[in-house]
Every structure is written in structure tokens, then in C-alpha cells.
Length: 112
Image (cartoon, rainbow, N blue to C red; front, side, top):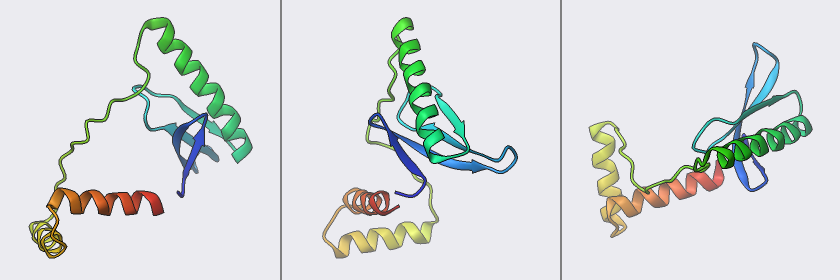
């Protein structure tokens, strides 16, 4: 996946901040913030490990659950015509809209 790196089993999204000339990593499945900055991939990996370790230690010390719980439910707002087209596409494949959207998201998430 582009712009995603895995550090100690946790995925982080990486962006470039042109104002400071550094890459920024942000863990996506944590219940709080643990971002990290560096100028290279090697630096991001090192800083990411340090940031994640500090975050997990702080959570343990304070009795905080470090990871987000995902319910599997979310609302999406799209144009009415796109909604209608998605319903038609799902029905054509004999799937519910939820199944069809879930499969589309899975494909996009794997290839992104």
C-alpha cells in the first residue's frame, strides 16, 4: 500500500510535510496520538518504534486501552445518483449493498 508502513505490527500512514521538509508517520489503529517525524525511511522506522513504545508504555502506566475498537459500522454520504448506481450494481451481482460496498472497499484497501 502506498504511503503506509508497518512498524512492530502496527500500520502508520506516511505523509510529507513540505513546511518542515520531513516525513510524518501517524499510527491509525491507536486510541490516541503517536505520530513521528524523520527525513528518511530508516529514520521513520526508528522514530516510529520509539513513538509506539513510549505510547504503549504510557497507556500501560495509566490503564488506558491503547488500540481503537472498530465496530464494523460507519455512515457514508454520497451523491444520490452514485447511491442509485451502487444499488443497481449490487443487485446485478445479486449482493446486498453492504456486501458490494464491503468488497469494493476491500479491493481498494488492498491495492491502495
